[in-house]
Amino acid sequence: MYTAQGTLEKERLVQQYAPLVKRIAYHLMAKLPASVMVEDLVQNGMLGLLDALNRFEDGQGAQFETYAVQRIRGAMLDGLRENDWLPRGLRKEMRRVEAAIAKLEHEQGRPPSEGELAAALGMTLAEYQKLLQEARGHQLIYLEDIAEEDEDYLDRHAAGVSPDPLELLEEEDLRQALVAAIAQLPEREKLMMALYYEEDLNLREIGEIMGVTESRVCQLHSQAVARLRAAVLGGESPPKLAKRRGRKPKSQAQHEAA
Image (cartoon, rainbow, N blue to C red; front, side, top):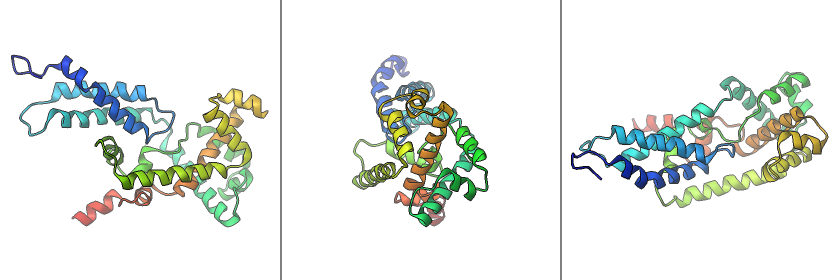
């Protein structure tokens, strides 16, 4: 893999490690929202591979592939952070919605209406619907939901060829919880989600079928995602979700290690 001058053969290494970039990308895709395109991950990963080729120095006590994996994943994660445009303040407000949904569902034994949620949040119905409209792009899983530091969770799942059987069981539990949560959605929201994710219709087309405006479909989508997050994640903060997944929050683990 080296030239006569002792330098890395970059073109040959790019070809050799291109499958590694794709493998890491597909590992990450299993943990990311459907809106993320695998092609974007691969493109960012290839930039990370080229960066690794430019920076790697033999004799540092690390194999090139080990070094490249870190650079590839880092480039993919950087790309994800850049594209995650929903403001943190708005995401915080949506977590308030999720907590209210979880609380009211527990008290009432049924999905709360928009009016009930607005009242629980101290908002008018119009203010609540405006919040749903602004939250377009709200996702079922965010990087910060998975662990206190993004790379901790994603790195563990992008590395290694053989998955841990315990992790597979945990992931299956999460999938089953999501299926059950979708079944409990109000009928209009369940229909909207089916048209959007199964039939691959856009918001305008869904609005025409349901007899509502495109903005109303957007509101229903944001609310449905909030209901699913409340059901699957239980309105938990990122450290609690790490615990729910069978791991200690990073800060707690570091404290115990000390």
